[in-house]
Length: 322
Image (cartoon, rainbow, N blue to C red; front, side, top):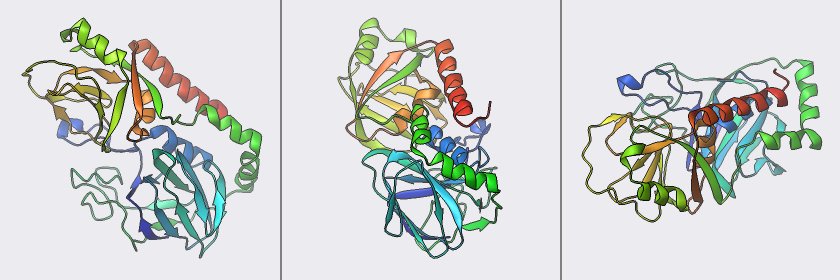
């Protein structure tokens, strides 16, 4: 398979690098883990199978062997040559055909999963390219896919029941069942967070201002984090030691604005943290385009865990894995 156009930013991903943050490496992986997981489950791939993450669309590929593929995530269109498909469909493609992903109408990240295994070098047990760390990717320099790059695929034999499953899943009623597990994408979202241990250092007025307003997503969006804009939360001059940062951490900067740290964040930071976005809602935040309004709602750890388990259960039920 050959890359004709890599679009704004496209790269191979898996579940990322785990257990290495103490060494200074971010966990990487998909921005929207929900959509990545859905793409692989649709094709009955392994949960950590390599897929292609596409930011802002624009990816174009030339297929060099017959296979199945599916596109999930952002609200965009998939084209096989000139034929149009929507997301969450399983599509059969043949050698010589071209695959193109349009720019999204809503959302940021799309996930293209293939029925054939992607062969790519592992760096610290992952294919993920992290530009800031200059780690991963085909040349281990942190660079994602490039035009004219070849992606090597291993053959995978598709069983008759898998092909039968494809035709069943593409039927309308079964597509509707996916609505409950797709990442919701909107211009106004509600995101839940768990207070952190520095929460008590914020005044009641500061907490009320943070929770009581709709923050706007700025154009400063990346796999490292999302910068928000709103009424400033005046925390004055705060001096603190740098410390480890969790995924979803909500940092309040000296200018009173919030930054949400995502999967390719730096491993330490020194801004006060009011809490962390719960795992189940991080995909929602990651898919927010600039201009989206975000309302934060406080919840406890038990609720956060319950929401994560509920999402897992929905996947299990939808795909008959329970």
